[in-house]
Image (cartoon, rainbow, N blue to C red; front, side, top):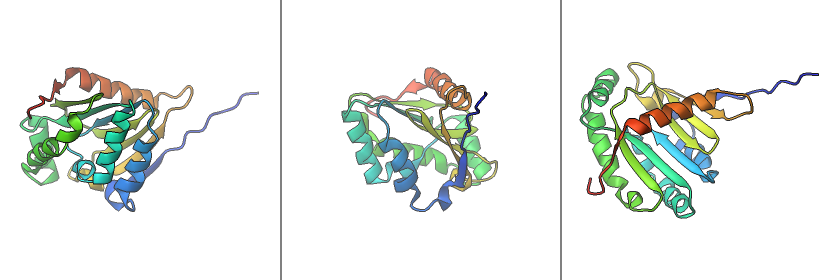
Length: 180
């Protein structure tokens, strides 16, 4: 007898999720026991939430590996994304703001930040074997695009695909200098 494993994929737009940062991202990151990975251009909504920042610091102090990939503020991919979203150079300014706001977290052991110049087709938020993937939709800001919740399952490869994508970008990204 053959049994099949079912995958559950849920989706909502980031901006329409009720109390999104506290509920969706807080729940995801609070369950992390080994690793938290974030791949974005900015995700200013995370760094501006003091509860999420406190959670990140607690996780880092508890030994959870914490890696963040932010967009290189002056790269062509970030500039193009701003043009496509109709917000001009606002993304570059937001990245610089996020870098400044993340400074206290960047001082903790086990926390690493890098800057990438990759064209992102989605943003990835990972806590151990769970991912939130915020798809990017041409002409729309990321907060108006769908979020997919993916969980690693035996025999599945979707989560592995996103994790490998993160690792490729991580390997090619530039470490963020402590003084930045």
